[in-house]
Length: 372
Image 1 (cartoon, rainbow, N blue to C red):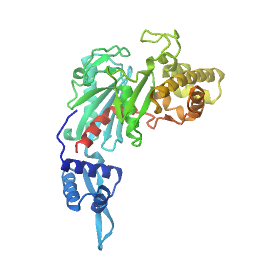
Image 2 (image 1 turned 180 degrees about the vertical axis):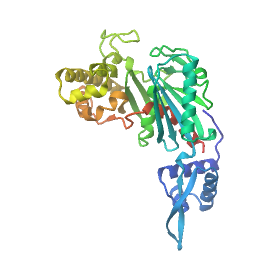
Image 3 (image 1 turned 135 degrees about the vertical axis):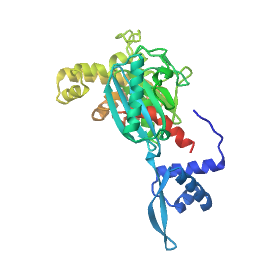
Image 4 (image 1 turned 90 degrees about the vertical axis):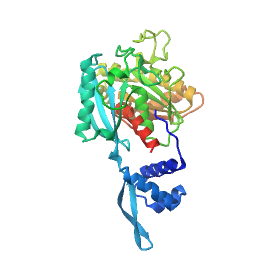
């Protein structure tokens, strides 16, 4: 990530911009009072932000000595970032504005291939998104590419990619036809970034991605903790049943083997929605599968709680259906917990879809905002 020297002027401007992001329609006097800055300082920085089209006059408010004060707000569409979610059979692409809002979503059913044709397609989808939104190149901050693999610290290389059989693949190939700054990012880390973005009050959390593959992400002081070797949060490969069912990784008894979304989708004729509809209908065979799923998941959740003592967010494909069953799961988790009789630390995701793609784009938004 880029690093620049920071002056008092930079800090003041950044504080003003972030205040306007949180509170639309503030006057100069409001800003000066809330940040304890002088009116000349506020005026100078507002003028700079206006020149950059990052804020705008959005009317007037109140009365100040007989005159109405101008109101200022952020311009969310001043810049945007693009995120890609790469899976075995599909590409999802989103565009995200400076407020973190998803302003466009597209999906394409396309089997993953390590071919020039596939990487050219990624470039075409990015360019089409920019064209659809009439985004000039200068407005696009970057492109995040989320993949189901472990990524080197510099966001350049997949060093473990057994799911898509693409260990060793590089950003250089993925972004070969993408004419914007780009990064590779682990899919679970990306999804967690989305959740932390919409929960600004949250400082520490563990995000569980309950999708075709199980992933996890650790957030400490609002930052992804990747571990000494970029392998933290890989909850899919903790052992919950010693010498249990085989996992694709070669080990036995991994959480992945018991809580993959595929297990539920396969029981619902290939559809999670069908499976959960059948659970609601009370079909005995589906209820048994779901009960076993929750029982195994509760083991993993309790272990995470013992290790990190933080909030735990359930996301991914299954997490999107979890609202109706969270109380049942909380009871199972509470029964295992030595120190707590309630599991209110267990939360369902706010992002029900597109969390991965949006989270892949958000690092560019955050970096830009931090450096305003």
